[in-house]
Image (cartoon, rainbow, N blue to C red; front, side):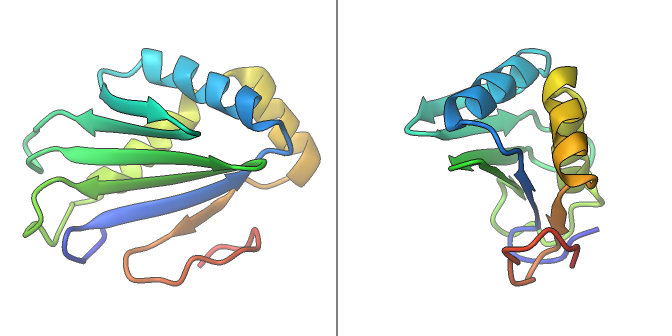
Length: 130
């Protein structure tokens, strides 16, 4: 459970693929989620997750930089300081829906599943977890 204003969860994943291939895979994953795509331009996708029992909804920002995908899920209500794990679940849902060939390539190349970064932490450039 993250604490911050607003509460958020960050995750970085290096795929070793071209940016276009990563964006295509992300778009395919998003098509299976009931998230509203607000913006999709310049290797950056912004979506909104519906209001639910735990929050007033979240904004999920996905940015592709080279072969790396950065995901930030944050509460849309600026004063919400607790997310009850919802932002981390958003990131997990998206990663779980990535096409299987993309995930298999990631496992073969790196043998790990990315770097989760909690609220208030410095984002590392390596694959180690914080």
